[in-house]
Amino acid sequence: MYTSVSEEEKLRHPNYQIMELRGDKLQAELNSWSREDLIEWLVWNDRNGVYRDEDSLREFDNILGKSEAISIIIRQIIG
Image: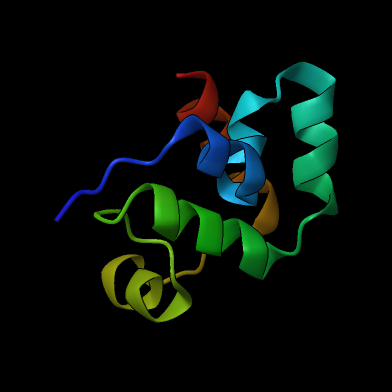
């Protein structure tokens, strides 16, 4: 069930805050995140994606690296 998120809630939640950044600020912020945090954001943002190690190993026989995770997040945010 989808529930609407208020603008105030978006401003406080880090998963939404990152979506307001662009360019070097976005890249710098994502570079400061751990690989695990990047994967958690991807899972939060795209529930149908295959990002967690166990799922990725089963589906693709490899795991998502940090640089690839950053690239995917940037594509998802910028569109």
